[in-house]
Length: 477
Ligand code: NAI
Ligand code: MG
Image (cartoon, rainbow, N blue to C red; front, side):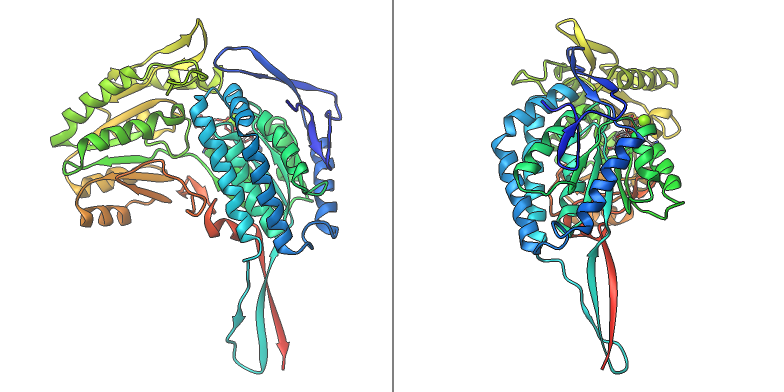
C-alpha cells in the first residue's frame, strides 16, 4: 500500500506532515493514514508537472512512444489486477466482483488511448487566396484531474489516459474517501516508464488540495467528476486564470419502461440501473418511469428482486450490494429515504440501514412507488440504492417526465418498438441513451452530460478534444 503523495517521481509525506484516516466502510476499520496534501504540496506537484511538460521527456517524445507507455501501464495494471481490485473494495465498500470490472475497464481505457497517441491529427484547410493553411493539435498543458470516490481508479483513468495520450502532464487529486488505488497506480506508471512529473498524485481534501489546484495559475485545465455543487465552485474558481474546464457532474437519470417492452428484461435492467455500485453511480437509473398498464407488474417484480438483494460482505463471492462509501453518505441516503416517506411515497422494499457482521455503513435496496415529480426523491440526486417509481400514460408524457430534471446525464428506454425507441432517444436531453440495456460503457463511447450534468466528454475520441488546443498556421505561398 502507498500512503504518501507522489510528486515529481517520488513518494513523500505532505509538507505539513499531516495525515488523514481512510476507513473501510464495510468494517469501519482504519485502512491507512494517508498524507494530506494542501496548497504547498499542490504547488510542488504543479511545478513538477510543468517542468516535465516543458522538458524533452514527454510532450516531445514520438507520439508512438507515449502510446507504448500507456500500453505498458495497461499490461502492468492487468498483472496486478487482483491487488488493485481488493484495495478498491476495501476503500469503497463495493463488491469485489465490481472492483474487478473497474480494474478491467481501466486496463481497457489505457489501451484505447494508447492507440490514439499516434492518431491525433490536424487538417489542411481550403482557404481563399495564396496560402497553405493547416491546423496543429497541441496538448493544453498541465491538467488538474479531480475525481470522486465511486469509481476511484477507473475515473482517474478516464482523465489520465487521454491527457497523457495528447502529451499533457497531470496532477491527480483523488477523493479523500478513496485515495489508495490512485497512489498505488503511481507505482504502475513509474514502472511503465512515465518520466518524473508526467503524473503526480496529491491526496487531500476538496476545499484545500482541490481548490488549490483549481486556483493555481500553473494549471491549464481542470478535468472534474463529482457533484454539481462542486462543479459550480470549480467553474467559478477557474474563471480568474481562465482555465479550460470539463465537468462530469450528477444525474437523476430516467429509465423508461414501455408496456411493449420485454418486461422481465426491463425489470432486471431497472435493478442493475439503480443497485449496481450501491446506486453511487452518476448515471444511475434513479427515476423509473413505467407505463401504467405494466406498472403493477414491474413494481411487484422489482420489489421481490430488491428484497433478495441483501447487503453483504463485499469480499463474499455472492454479494451484489456492498457498503455505501462512508457514514456521511449513509446519513445522506437515509435522510432521502425519510423524506420520501414524509412526502407520501409508498415504500415497497428496503428503507433502512443495515450492518454485516454487526458493522458497516450499508443501506438496504430501497424502492419507492407512487412518487410524483415534485417529491424530493424524484428531483435530487440521492447517490444510494434508492429507486423512485413514477407511472405514465403516453409516449409524450414519458418524454416530458424524463426531461423534467435539471440533470441530463443518461436515460434508459425499454421497448420493442424501434420507431418509439429512436423517437424517445431523440426527445430526451441526456448525454447517453441506453435502449434495452443500462449502464453499458466502452472506452470508445463518449460519456458526459447535458444541462446541470456538466459539459465536455470523457472517453471516445471526443475526450481528446478536452486536452488539445488547435493552432492554425498560415503560410503565404
Ligand atoms: P464532491 O463533489 O464534493 O467530491 C468529488 C471530488 O471533488 C473529491 O475529490 C473532492 O475532494 C473534490 N472537491 C470537493 N470540494 C472541492 C472544491 N471546493 N474544490 C475542488 N475540489 C473539490 O462529492 P461528495 O461531497 O463526496 O459527494 C456529495 C454528492 O455529490 C453525492 O451524494 C453525489 O450526489 C454527488 N457525487 C456525484 C458523483 C458523480 O460521479 N457524478 C461522484 C461523487 C459525488
Ligand atoms: Mg463534497
